[in-house]
Amino acid sequence: MYNQALQLIKKYDTIIIHRHTNPDGDAIGSQVGLKHIITTTFPNKKVYIVGDTTKRYAFVEDWTPDNIADETYNGALAIVLDSGAPHLVSDDRYKLAEATLRFDHHLFVEKFCDVEIVDTSFESCCGLIAHFAKHCNLSMDSVGAKALYTGMVTDSGRFRYDSVNSQTFECASYLMTYSFDTNDIYGNLYADDFANIKLRAMFTLKINFTAKNVAYIYTTKEELLATGADEFSISRGMVGTMSDIKGVHIWVNFTETDRGVLCEIRSNKYNINPIAVKYGGGGHQKASGACVENHAVAMQMLADLDAMMQ
Image 1 (cartoon, rainbow, N blue to C red):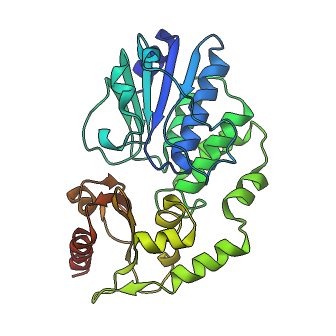
Image 2 (image 1 turned 180 degrees about the horizontal axis):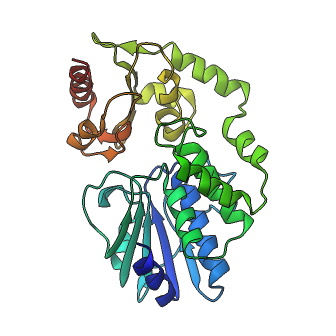
């Protein structure tokens, strides 16, 4: 299934790699990983990565986005990673490229690139990219392998989620042949300073429950500002505070921002993806997200999630 993708990469001398907005470890890891696969295998190609920035994954080597002019897209290939829909792509200039390619592991919503490799059997886009490199006998270096492994760790919940399968461990084993320090990855991801530990404790005390035991946290813009943390650290970072509560099978974290209310929805039992899609988002069966207009719409979403518990 990779032949068309490989032929596109071989054809173009300039390649620009995109991923989704508000990047997580999988988005950053797949972007850096694919860049290093291409530059190691084809040293004469110019490869750029673009998108919005994040403090959370600044420890990933070579993650800093490039600042490129529109003209760079002339006669170039744009590759979109880890994005289930076009409005989720960070920097829509990918549309200016001569050709477009997409690698993704989310549930399919629509086709928006010339060639698409969408496979939901992978726990992460990083896993898909690792499999692509291994299957096509492409070269890599330790920087790329470490970035891909980082994304696999984050999107699999440290290999705990039920999206993990034998394929996951095969790809992880392949990446580890490139000799990088896993302690460095886990230290940066999970070792925390006391201020953040207190922040998680504060959000644990903010947990509420619907009539049918859907757990949720709602953070206003004023509360977000008062934390001193960025949107990602609160929206993505705090949804996990509800993940291990006995009797809770759906939980959602609402975070008000200038762009709307970010909604991170999770479940350990139900397919919550249709709810996310209904409100303009997407993702996976048990981990999806959306951005809605205001508090009232967020509460409508919560009511829909509550109704699933029937």
